[in-house]
Length: 212
Image (tube, rainbow, N blue to C red; front, side, top):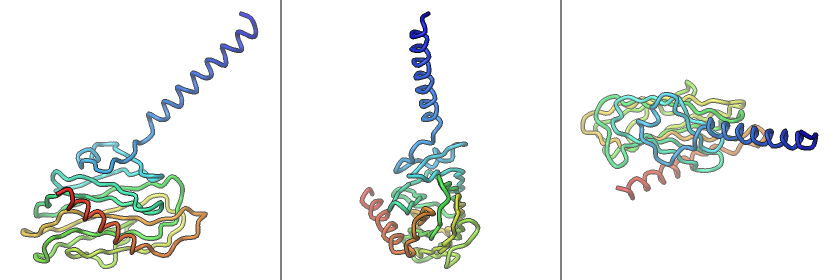
């Protein structure tokens, strides 16, 4: 084989190898989080999905029934995850919902918040939520309260969210939402985003009521 032909063959094989490597990388990458995913799907061992540059994983839940998980990006720096009965309500008992968020690069975690959608004022529903082991203020939350944690912590790569909700008979609890506000390290942090958090919860509530 002539030298020119050998060189062309090497270039061709190199191109094929590059395509195969790229295809393999895409196949191994976590899929984008769907807007609404069944709880059974996210509880599948090894399930991960991405929303922007955030990867969600390590989901666990108990007594949540046939719930769904809703993912939303309220702004470039604010993501939200909702455990919802999608028009229905959770059965009485203790409902848990936990997950991890891993950032592509360390960020400054500005704030995290939680809200529960309860259609009844009595009996009281209680929710205890922690982000990276820190409980919200107030804690526990009751009925349709919202609570938050203001961090201002630099160099955060993972967020560990844990929710435990106690539902008594007669309480109509339809959803629980966790929201995170963060900035990449090289940006100047914005003021706390609790107003955006409230708007995000309102948007989710209106969306669910429109579907039902």
